[in-house]
Length: 457
Image (cartoon, rainbow, N blue to C red; front, side):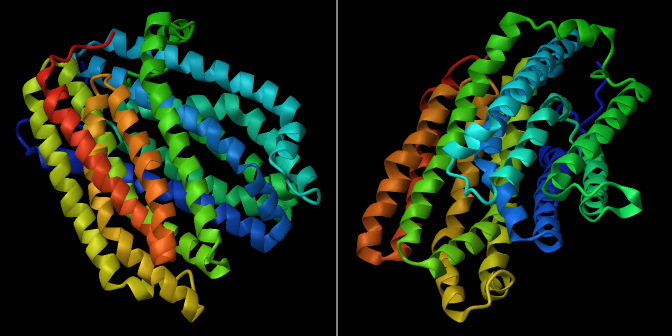
């Protein structure tokens, strides 16, 4: 089978070099997506006003739930495609892709219909302020209506990553980002005779930019005769194979639930932080901005380990799984260690990008000092859970993650804030990361490693 991406079985280069070839575009993709969202918020806030930014922000909880589900589906499809690709089974690769495309399209259509109909009710249930509910409703309806296009596009990018190709999705993400940056202010200001769309400009720009990028993406796959090109065979497979869909959901649903549980924990933590005043809340927001960029490499390495692990299992090369884990863990500590060392060395200057008030700056600096080192442990656990998920083992890695969050992070933060104040809240993060890495390591060593891992479908 043609290998358009990184070939993990290429013995001419060390495994760490193959990891980096896949990792760099994946990390850059994450950074680009974050930058794109930030620019959209800047355009709204500066060109329209605070109410426009608030109107879009009010829809975020609903969008997050939808994308949590998609993240889960993506993780399931990536594992199955990785296994089939590792086995050289092009027919199975296309069948998995077709089934997941059909499922995401059906889900997108359902979201478009139900979301558009229920948007005002959802916003009222979220307690959206009355002065922005009309703008929020207009924005939400456009987002819901774009789901049948956006969902399949996002699914397709995960398919390619499952085959070891992280570069092609990155190129087309650049295209959609550039178009989005051009379209958003153009619709806000009415440039070139375009209509003034106000707060919905971001959603319309997203639809156009990602729609154009998706079409160009599919054309590129056809021109290069990519194994995952959309053709009649893929279209027939969109009728969905129940066995494949069930296997995807078995991996994807627990993953999506874990993402949701992490976010709910953040809501609990911010409620603790808010007790210490607006300066503490501002410091929390600034530290989260810094931490998000530290997390990107760790999460990307975990995804890479999962994909490479799935390809090894599909190719019946379980002997390589240990090397995948060791390489991924080593890269986590090497790359993450450098980033964290730089953040420690220039912490005052970095925090100063977000905060100018001396008191708030001092709070944020203290929080960064307490928590930053522990994200190396977060990356370590992400690698082990990623490799275990590559075999379809999702239950215990998910349970371990949820226990660490709700059994350690939240209660430790609550207890220690009564002893150490705001610093105690932040101590919950290192405590949770220590526990989760120990739990994942224990399950990986004493149970998962001792099993034989076969292809799921």
